[in-house]
Amino acid sequence: MLLPVVAIVAVVAVFGVDKVIDTVTGVFGGGGTEIIAEGEFSIMVSSADEKKVKSCQARQVIQQKQCNNLKVVVIDAKKMPYIGRGIREAWESGLPGLLIMNRANEDVNRAASCRSKRYQRNYQGTSCDEYPMAPTDEGGENAHVEEVPKRENLCQGGTVRWQYPKDGDKFLVVISNPGSIAPQSYVGVDIAKDQICPT
Image 1 (cartoon, one colour):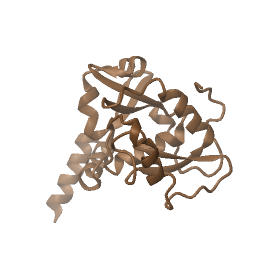
Image 2 (cartoon, one colour; image 1 turned 60 degrees about the vertical axis):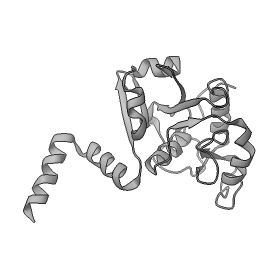
Image 3 (cartoon, one colour; image 1 turned 135 degrees about the vertical axis):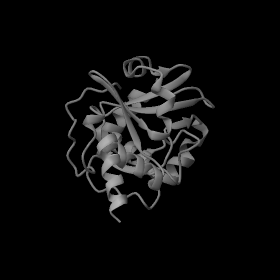
């Protein structure tokens, strides 16, 4: 009985609590997240996709929206803390970070996620955000939905409109400024309303 406890303590001492929790979440929950940091630049990726960006610097991923030949869509948690939270929760539940663009699916997927009975708008000026995004092969009925300030959804639309690849292309979603991810679900107060977003 004592041996397993000693082994667990040793693993935590060597790898750290956060890494052990991420690993356990990945094994039993089907997903997880990893943070890749570089000075003031840092990104969060799904654990399953960490290797896809490990060869690139975080600064390059954020600025060039690309790693090697893989297109990257960057969601800035400083501007969109609740959308960032929803994406992180989706990854932790096992949903993918690597998506395939398919705009033909958008209306059907949105109806299956945000317009379904499982999403109820509770606060004035809010919007439903789904991940994986509606215009992808992976979006739809199994998407994670999150109530977010309407400003964030408009911000996301302006941000990703020019980042999305052509239909049929794969792209990786990453979250920049992961330290700004909202600590709890949206409760009617936009904690990033002072942030300027593209339109």
